Image (cartoon, rainbow, N blue to C red):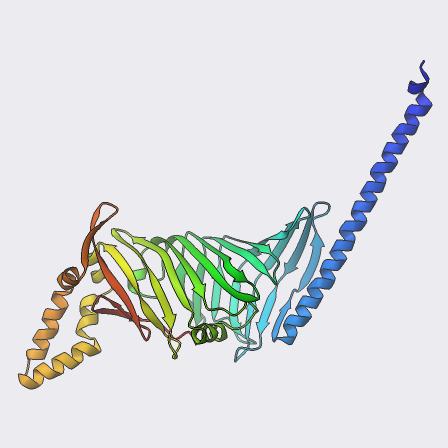
Length: 374
């Protein structure tokens, strides 16, 4: 037998190979456990910094796992308390699992289990959200995100009043995506946000929004100084002071036979209310006006009150007649002032959707009012 193939030499090679594998395994294990300890230290430091800013984050229990090729943090019964809000607000969920591949540490994938509750600290929940699946992804780091995505399956949001849950939002599927399109987290970021939803309804907003809708909205938010954590009213006040705006670059919403697409720009005035205009093309205008009760909105508007009062002073009863005629001729009036066009092969009309100190007008028709953002 040749010397290179002697059993003794072959055994030594096997032993050396096993020794190398064991050494690699031990070294990899040491690196992984060292990284876990460093992650614990980093998270503790982040929580301490957030606590100084009035934001407390906690887990009932926290464990690390994912060995050998992932890092996982499992947080049972996570809570967040925002002391800067008056009164302080507490948000709680059932569980959060955050994971990152060891070869891609700048991509964090999370899965959140509901229900999620929102309440004044020490009080029963005022809002309850739940879903069958909620996954999030963050590209970058939690302190300096570059891209963020949230994906919901069958989400729902309820308001709780007197122990009774009132549905506000329901949907089959919702996706929210955000990215920094210009600037950086610390230097005048311009944020692009996209919202996609399927079979979404908002019964708590308006009866017309109770029927399922599909849609997508893409917007650019300009005017941020940075992306440091702060209450949204403070952030919106900064945007207003910097003459920032919200550019709606694309919007499409469909509800049954009603289809609307539009784009435009909105800003904030000194009262924290929306100003601006979107150019909206609507197919199924008459159905839409009927759904929102446009006739009653026009007949009961403050402008109509002034006109009717003036006419009644000239001739009693003339104001009531004017109200009736105004309500009956809304669709025809909008079609006259709008631009006839086609939308996906259907007859449509393009009209301005105006925001004036928070009041919303479709052409001349008042259709609602948005709340102040600060």
